[in-house]
Every structure is written in structure tokens, then in C-alpha cells.
Image 1 (cartoon, helix red, strand yellow):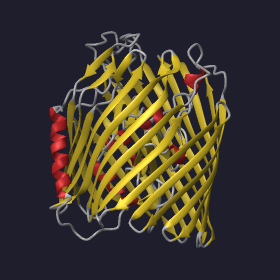
Image 2 (tube, helix red, strand yellow):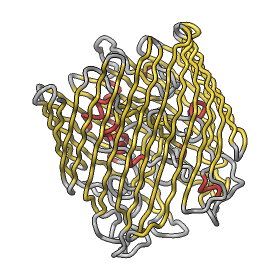
Image 3 (tube, helix red, strand yellow):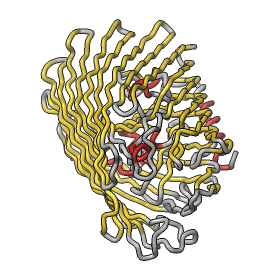
Image 4 (spheres, one colour):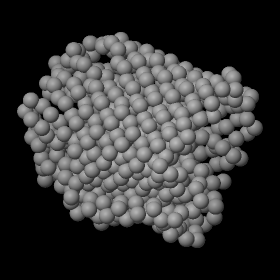
Amino acid sequence: MHSPCRRAALAASVCLLFSFAPVAPAEDDAVVVTATRTEQRVRDSIPHTTILTAREIRESGAVDLLSLLRREPGFEFTQNGGIGTASGTFIRGAAANQVLVLVDGVRISSLTTGATQLEQLMLDQVERVEIVRGNVSSLYGSGAIGGVIQVFTRTGRGAPRASAEIAAGGEDTARLRAGFAGEVGATRFSVNASAFRTGGFSAIRPELLPNANPDRDGYRNTSLSASLAHRFAPGHEAGLRLFSSDGRVEFDNDFGTPTERNRNSAELDSVLLYTHNQLASRWLSRLSLAQGRDRFDMFTDDNLVFRVRTRNAELRWQNDILLSPEHTLTVALEHLRQSVASTTAYARTGRDVDALAAGYVGRFGRHGLQLNLRSERYSDFGRANTHFAGYGFDLTEAWRLTASVSRAFRAPTFNELFFPGFGNPNLRPERSRSAELGLQYAAGPHLARAVAFRSKIADLVNPFPIVNMNEAEIAGLELSYRGVFRGVQVKVSLTFQDPVQRTAAGEAQLIRRAKNFGGLALGKSWGPWRVAAELVAAGRRLDNRIATFPPERVELRRYGVVNAVAEYRFSRETSAYARLDNAFDRDYSLVHGYNTQGRRLIAGLRHEF
């Protein structure tokens, strides 16, 4: 194992030992919904689930979602330059189009690429994040082979009050947020707006591509979230949630010229209308109508090169039936309409998906059980059936064993099916089988997990030519711990995996995925001060050499990056903070030929009125 990951492994081992020490009385666990689509304690979740709370997001000092997630177990990402540039997401080695991203439960993935522009999600709008690792297609349908990342935007609670935040830093970086949220009687509301900009740095390394434009590649983003909910009577609530992100990023073209100017305009938005009705003492009905949109424009020298618009419109009716205090049955009907409009002429411009899903979560003494079944019919390729079967056994009050088996699938994207000259309309969906075995320790402030997993993906789509010819197998071990030891907040993650792809030519490591990576975060508070530091590290990875076709493989070096945060509270309402990214100015690559963030300091001020 490479040295940065050896340090992370040692830290993981030490922190897991911490969890065996005497601890404080058990605290109420945070509640998550993504692992079952119903509420449960995070410690009761059978799939490996993590929640990132509003406090953790605030204390991280991070600007965007990718910076927050990179220290989480099983999570890797790539980026073609600085903040806002094109990114790729991996969970347990599964690719970006095999990881589902939801905002307030709304799917906003692109129908043409199958992925979500995660780089456009700024943390100023985010209240919490839930990550479910592993195969959960039986809950969410296509694209959840590697797992689900669900982002929840800000909501209102308590007495109405305004808040504001302002920050500035290196590379002409500026950040501004303002919000107003709270409760009035039976009505909750929240409105939050933010703006971010940075001058950035040149995305491409000039020593590798001398013809690329050497100027700085900046980024601007404006985001908005709003929510309104009213409780008409006990057990009866209706609400509306809105989210919008508008990002403008400059980038370098692999095959460009030194004077060429390239930029992208990317917009993500979602709207959710819902009603929750307690129709009987044991029957909760949840009806929702949602729409998620992904819009993308590419310009060269201010001339439009490419435009695409994707829309996901979904109607869902979920019924939660409480069979007894520890047994819940869920039945749901869904209709999804996906459509695309583009300057590219696709042979088809939409698909319809109808789904029937059923789930069960229950406990029998020390035994926990989760079962999910889902049957979907796609208008373009037919039926897809998935399942999840999970079991948990409480060895003691603190120790728990978990195990699960599941099946998932990914529907072909419209680029894969219909892109002129390259698409293959006869593609079959990718299909995955997964199994995992876990050991958990949860007591007081400590939560530690060790999870062994294995996934096999059949009918993997080959990028060129586009055919179902490949197979992938990803096996690994996740170690994670979070808790408090002697007043120090500790968070550790370490992942070992073997992500391989098999073709007629043989077996190879999947590109841009490390065999070992991890993160360590330490935080300490005393008086008005809080200081924290984090290390993220990864071993070697393979990638395609920049600007070569057909692709030629090249090795990316291992790396370890340290970030630091300090906060000072003047009062309960006012605080100042500073975040230092890449404190030791480490030079490394996430994508061959592209630069990453160097040392940068951002300082800011928060206030609640």
C-alpha cells in the first residue's frame, strides 16, 4: 500500500480501537430515509448509510458538494480542472451513470449521459446529505448500481429569522449567501439564495498540451432553494420545494488552440409538490409530483456549439402501512416520463417508465429484516425486475452483523442508444448482482462499520464501439468510524477495492478508480474556538492519456492532500471562519493532463439576525 494510504489505514485502525473503549450513554441517532424510503435510525440501516448533517456541512468550510463527499467511505471523484468543471463520481467503483443523485427526492440526471452534474451543487443550499452505498435499484430504479446520494435543501423550523454569510479568498474567490426561514403556526417556510465566483486556474497542464489556452478558467454560480409546508390537521401536510443552480464555467479544450475561449453553461433545477396524509392510524399516504431538469450549453468563442435539455417528470404514490410497532409494509406506484431536446438529432426524444414497488422493514427481537421488490416497464426496451434482501442480527446492544444480496440495472442512455453515427439502438440494460457482509459497532458517540462487498455487472456498455460486450467485477472492504474521543471529533474512512473490467482482450483495472483510498478528519473545540484538519489520500489509478485516440493508458500517481479549517464564535449568532485547501500545495492529478486546486485560503463571516 502506498504511504498516504498507509497513514490512513493506521489512523483507521487506531480509531476503530477507540470505539471499543468505555463510552458515554447512548444518544439518539440521526434519522435517515434514503436506505428504505421510510424513516429509520442510521444505526438500524442494513445498507451502509451515512448522514452529513447541517452542522458537519457548516464546520467543514467546504464550498461545493464534491469537496464535502471526497472523504466519505467508498466515494471517489474526478474533475477536469477546478471547481465547476466536468466531474465524474464513483461509489464502490461504480461509474457516474451507475450512481443515482436525488435532490429532495427528485431525479435530476441527464438522459443523454445518465449522470448528474454534481459539480454544480453548492453547499449554501444544502441542509443535509444521505449516502447509501451498494445496489438499491429495487428502491429507486435505474442508475443505483453503486448507490444513491440524496441532497436535502434547507427548510424552516423555529422562530422566523434571517441569516447571511460572506466570504472571500485566493484566486479572486467570493461567496455570498442570504436566507430567511422559520415557522408561523402550522406553516414552515424557507428561502435561501447564494452566489459564488472564482477566477480559478488553467485547467489543462501546458507542459502536456502546449496548444491549450493558458489563461485562468473561472467559475460562477447562482443558486436558490425555497420550501413551503403547511399542516392542515394532525397527520395531514402539503408542501412545495424548489431548487435551482446556474453555473458558468470556463474550460480548456484538449484539441483547442492557445487563443480559443471555451465555456459551459449548466443549469439544474427541481420542483416537488407533495402531500402526506394519515388516512388511518396505521396508513400513511404520500403523493408527490416532481420534475427535475438538466440543461447544458457549450460555447467556443461565444458561438454555441452544443445544447441539450433533459427533463424527468415523476408521479409517485407511496403507502406506508404499519403492521405493528416494529413492522412496516410499503407499496408504491410510479410513473416517470424522461425527455430530451437538443441540437443533436436523436432518433427518439423520450421514454416512459411505469413501476410497482413493495418494501418491508421489520424486527423480530434481535433480528432485523429489509425486503424490497420492484418491477418496471420501459417503453423502449421492456421490463426490468430488481430486488434487495437484507438481514441484521444484534450480537449485543452495541455489536451488529448485517448481510444483503441484491440485483440492479442501468438503462442505456440516449447517447449510447441514438447518438448519430455512434449509437446502438439494440443495447441491453447493464445488470448487476451484489452481495455484502458487514460488522457494526454503535454506542454513545461512536459508530464504526466494516463492510465487505462484491458486485458483478453484466452487459457492461463498451464506449467504442457502443455494444454490450464487457463485464465488470468490483470487490472490496470499507472501514469507517466517526465519534468523539477525549474531546476530539474523529472521522475515518478507508476503502480497499479491486475494480476490474473483463473484455475479449483480457482483464484490466477500471480507469480513474484507485485500489485503496481514504480520509481522516480531526476536530477540536474549546471556548469560542474550533479547529479541524482533514487528509484525503488515494493510491495509483489508471487513466486515458489526454488528447489521444484511440485511448492510451497512463498511470496517475498516488496522492495525499491536507485541508484545514478554523472557526471563532463571537456569539451564538455570529462566527468567523477560514478554510485552507491543499495546505501543503500538493501537485497531483485526478484526470490525466488536468490541474487540481493548489493552496487556497478562503475566510468568511456568518450571522443570524
